[in-house]
Amino acid sequence: MRSCRVLVGVGRGGKVSALLGVFGALIVAAAAGEGSAGAAAMPRGLEVTLQDDALLLYRPRRQVRRTARRIAAIGADRVRLTASWSALAPDPDSRHRPRFDATNPSRYRREGIRRLDTAVSEAAAAGLSVQIDLAFWAPRWAVARTLSGDRQRWRPSSREYGRFALALARRYSGRARDPVRRGRRLPAVRLWTTWNEPNHPGFLLPQWSRVGGGWRPEAPHVYRRLHEVAFRALKRVDERNRVLLGGLAATGGTRPGYRRGLPPLRFVRELACVDRSLTPLRARRCRGFRPLRADGFAHHPYSLTQPPGSPQPRPDSVALAELDALASLLRELRARGRIETELPLYVTEYGYESNPPDFARGVAPRTQARYLGLATYLAWKQPDTRMFAQFLLQDIGPDRRYGARSARRWHDYQTGLYYHDGRPKPALQAFRLPFWIEPRGFGVEPELTIFGQVRPGAGSQRVTIERRAGDGSWESVASRERDPLAACCSLASVEFDTDAEGFYLRTASNIGGGDYRARWLLPDGRSRTSISLKSP
Image (tube, rainbow, N blue to C red; front, side):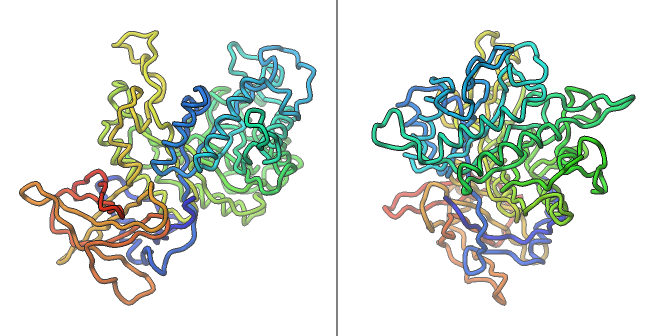
């Protein structure tokens, strides 16, 4: 697990500039002092988690094993798995609750539990940690109102959800016997998230409720009850279990309605039972409110087709560029006693769809790769962020029920590092070796800030920066690290070592334009390169 990173000075209330135009945040960083891979490094975890339920939960064990090993080989630290309540519960389509001990994992559907066991075991065997979402949807017998179809989500029973959480916590406590590998125990899972995107109508209803002649937010209060019972259940099994609150979508609707999602900042305020001025709400739904308990706050700060540094246009939204706003709100709620402890941020889902293959959505594959480098940089220098994510190893692929010209053919996510047929995208290279460059300053001697990470390696790695020469060849560039504790910069060097987690932050002379890339120098004499970026 990559447990440390360099802290880059960024004002807590500030917002990061857009992709190519504005670089004010970098000037702020220079004034505040920049961290480097040396003595100034500060211990802040930035794990990388990768989710691909299609490959990890719905394939034969041998293929799951290959997938887990591939995920570990490209540099992820953890996998995120969905424990679908409706897929695991017995008789999920019945209106009447079956008679069973819902706290006993062996009473859940055998095939679903077996799939989850396989994914957890093979991930652990590959050296990966595991995060489980106790997530969508509910069995029909556990909701207040049934909906057409199989996506039941109307006020799920918190009591039944707590029993489900207790069953899964027992299953992956580290003490349960593995039913397949005789004499062994199933690995322990120590990171959990309650539900998934509760501010999105696709996962929880109602989002709002009619009260008299107006509307009031409802989903935050339904979710608070779900989270509280799951938190108690998970901690009851083992205090070492870390439980994440939230898992919110990046944006929401601008008007109320049963099926109109809530923007995340509004959702958090309602969750904490405060109004816009953070004054406690006296409404009936907040009677008996107790400070929220969690070990972190999960968020999904997608920007869809916009660059990672672009803020969402809708109020109270939180894209990657606006993580500071979410972090600030959580700190303020903690200071006012609405949250029990400080909550670091965990980006547990993120990515960009590529076009192709999806001709109706997404960005060009090369742009997808560039955006992943910038997104890693923005997450890395946000002081409260402890985890970053990649959603999908491999594209889900086309829905062949629809014709080649139909946009619905590609309605599933195509955010993978590989195309659905297994061919690698440029994003794979960008995931292994995230890389980003920005102008550092202006004047007589302009410089570049150069950021990157070596993910597949373990410990400090040897790197050099290269620039494309006029004849098309690549030449090494002398760069230096900056130490805010020293009077000046380090000496320039062509080769340098990353910090123990593979990160580096360098400066080099900006001699005007040109393509740059990082080269990872392996001990056996081989090397690998990042994607190349043109200097702005």
